Length: 432
Image (cartoon, rainbow, N blue to C red; front, side, top):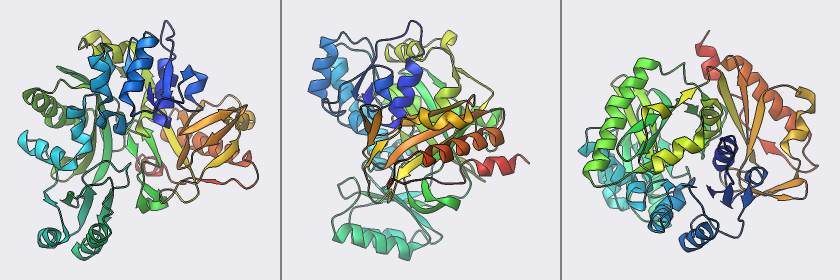
């Protein structure tokens, strides 16, 4: 398992439930992955030579790549070249995420519905292009920016001020100078992930995530402040069939036509508009925090599913199915996120906070962190994703927030973690 975030902890947690139980290693891992296997804290997620060397020394039979930076760095290419089956595309396939401009052109080539857009490279071309976006514009830095390179602007003037700042200070998120300007779409968002083996794919259960930092979708964009699954308030079975035929199947056909043997997770962020579903973005890996609410609902053996995809051997017997229960996940962050990451030290293990809610089906996944004795030191940013199950969204949501409150009371003096109070409230209200 390559990576160190809550997504990787969730993957490790689910992989460890396979039968027979796998011997699991995580590079560099975190306080959560350490509970399910052996961390390699000295091996960076983007260090292809070190990862390959350590994998060969330990007889690794399957590599699962979590973060986008590792995919963009070519870790998948290096491990495959060393003869190791990999769940995660090569660098060429990962361009669907690492370059928003490339992704938009890919969607146009293969008839995948998406918002009207223009690509600009400097302030002058931006000013000219913004004249075509009168009713709101979404500004997207082309490269990887950890969820912070997207800004929704109310009008062209706001977008022009932002772009002038980026270009004058040479501070385009993710580096480079290409920026995608996109029409602002209206509708409900949903995330759908698919497991792909190069030739065929299986879609996973849908989820809805919350990207803005504050309640009521206020504040700056983040990597994700929480999620819930299933997304029954926005997407039914017919909607899923439509997404498969209009988004995922054309995308897979496009990847094959371009000679990209894509084996890994293909994530589509979708806006359900009056014109139909429109793709906001593709990611080349499992989403975070969507993974934390989708995988707990997955029935079956995750090792078997991901290994078959890595080997190009998906078959109908491996088609994933999901629990009818709802899972709600709430992300606890350090103060100041997403503008800066404030480390949090001497945190209690999550289980200690559960004494008052014994028997409740709650699990928590650590972000970037390390164990120090029986305590956890977190790097900051997104510290913990607290996930709860329920027979409906209201029950799952109540349990998740009760667990968050219980954990917060156990924090050491001087440490504060913040979280949104409205995760999944939209779904709860829609179902009444």
